[in-house]
Image 1: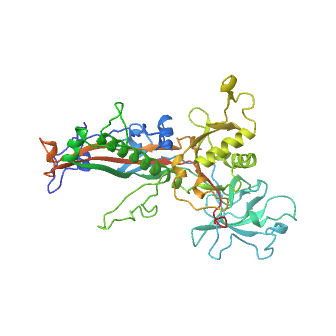
Image 2: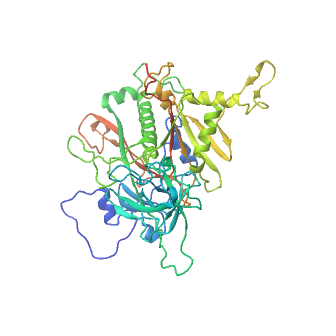
Image 3: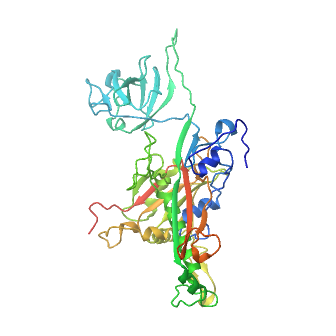
Length: 491
C-alpha cells in the first residue's frame, strides 16, 4: 500500500481499473516476473532465463532511475524504458549519399586517395571531427580528416568528411571494398600540427533509453454446469489422461492444457514476438476489427537490429563450428560471474547432428562408455560444449521441429535446421544483456455462472476459467540465427 499525500482528488464518470488505482496511489504493484516453470519442454528458453535469474527485481509502476538509481522507468502499465549506458568505444559506418555512393574521388575513382590527394567519404554520424584519424575495417588502413570542420551534414542523415590516406607513401590508396554501405570504421586518435594548433574536438557520452513494450495474452476454457457435474461424478468415459487411480477427471486436465498453451505462447513471445509499436512515432500500428489498438513488444530475436544470420549448407561440421565461434566471439561477453555463455536452441534434427559432430571430434573418447558387461552403452549425448573460453548450452527445442517449413531437396524440412543462439552475458557497458520484465503477475480467475451457486457473475448455467499474462523482455545482446538456405534448394 502506498499513501499519497496532497489535496483530495475526485474521480467521476470512470470505472475503477488498474491504472486508476495506480494513479491514486492505492496500489504499489511491485511484482516479480512469473515464469510457468512446470512446463520446461514447452518453454525451454524462459526456463533457462528463470533458472539463471535473468528477470527484473523491484520493478513497479513508480520506477524511475532518476529517483531510485535503477535502470528502468515505467512510462505506462505496458511500457518500460531501460537505461542504456553509452559505450564510448563507438563504431561508425559508411553510408550511401543521395547519389548512392559512399565515397567520391573524381581524380582516382578506382584507387581513392592515391598520391595523398584528398577525397570525400560519407558516414552515419559526426562523432569523428577535424584532424582525427579513422581506422577502417581491415584493421590497417587509416584516413586523416584534413580540415577543422569534421563531418558536414548531408541530406539523408549522412555526414561528408574530407580525408587523405594516412601514411608516408605516395602510392597508398584505399581498397574500395572497405568503403561500402554499412562497412565499419572507428575513431582511433587525433593528429594536429606541432606548433600553434588552434582547436580540439569535444565528445561526451550520456547514454539513453530503449523501449520495452509488454504483451498481454489471454487464454480460457469453459464448461456447462451439466458437464462439470458429470465430470465430478466421473460419468465421462474415454478420458485422455489417466490419474493415479486410472480414472482422472477431465476438467483438471483442461486446466493443465491451458497452462501448457500459456507456457508455449509466452516462450514464443519472449523469443520471437514482434512489436506493433513504431520505433519512430512510438504509436501502435496494429488494430483489430473494432479499431482497438493491439500493442505488443519485441522478443529477443527482433530487438535492436535483429539477428545475424548464418547459412548452414552442410549442417554441423567442425569447420562450421570453428567459423561460427570466430564470428560470434566478440559478441559473447562475460556475465556477472565472469563466464562467457550462450544458449543454442535447436530443433531435433539439428540437435542430433550437433551431437554426432561432437562425437566425431572425439570429445568424449575416453569417458563415453556407460555400464558394464552386456549393459554397456556408448553415450554421445551432449548438453553443450566449451571452446576458446565460451560455453555453449545446447537445448533441444522440439517445437522448432513442429513449425511450418518447406521441403528441401535432401528430403528434410527447412524448419528442422533453424536454430537460435542467444548470448547471455553483460553488455559492453556492464549491464545485464537480457532480462524479463513484468509489471503485473500472471492472473488466473473464474467467471462463475449460476452453476457455481452463491455469488455469481452470470445467470448462464456454465462457467469459464481464464488466465492473463502480461510480459516483456529487454535484450541488448546480439542474437544469431542458423539455417539451411531455402532459395534454389526446395523441391
